[in-house]
Image (tube, rainbow, N blue to C red; front, side, top):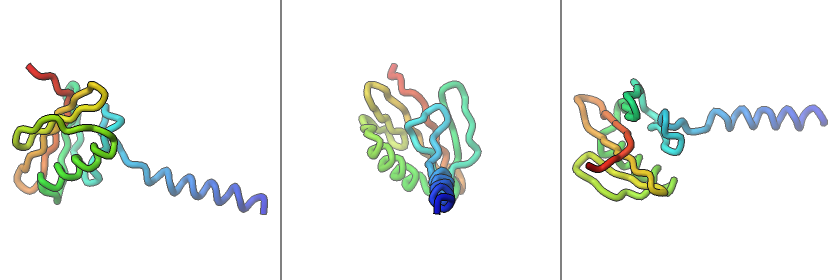
Length: 111
């Protein structure tokens, strides 16, 4: 019995460690889309591609996920969204490119 309980705890921790949602590199409080691929960073901007999802679906995913994390959408221009949390602003751009959706995330600094 003493061996069984620690073994169960270890198995449960391994199971849940695989369930953690990945975050966008450099943005620890912003989730990475589950179907994201081709992730690369340029300065403070992170770009990635989401296959088999439309720009509307990806934008909706981020609207829901960011609201859960208390980000507030403060502006929008077509496919560009500005979110704010505790004085920090980010720019999320979601566009359809051929058979995939391209996502760009960067700090927002108005001119």
